[in-house]
Image (tube, rainbow, N blue to C red; front, top):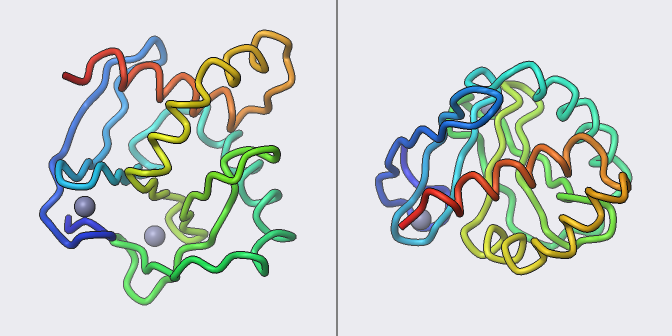
Length: 144
Ligand SMILES: [Zn+2]
Ligand SMILES: [Zn+2]
């Protein structure tokens, strides 16, 4: 797969989590990442319900360029927010349910990690938040 941002070849990675392995593609140049829905566990089905709901009302305000899905021909990715109170955007495919995360966006999640953990502890976080938090912690822990 080629990176949606810088067009370089992406590497496939596997992270072992408590819910089983997560497969994803990562760009070593810019840090962009692609996650296939089919490669993840049952938790993800819950997550995607939330993604679809939260995406509809906010799409119009987004000024970032549209990207096309690396898996589905001719399918544009929807812009969705990582969580309601953040400005972190994900690109989400309504067809294959995969999603794209820019390297810069990943760093912003990283920066807000402590705040996000507190939200999660208080139970203020929906399934998508908890899923990404688990994912981010997992990746940060095992990355060089
Ligand atoms: Zn890249
Ligand atoms: Zn797709």
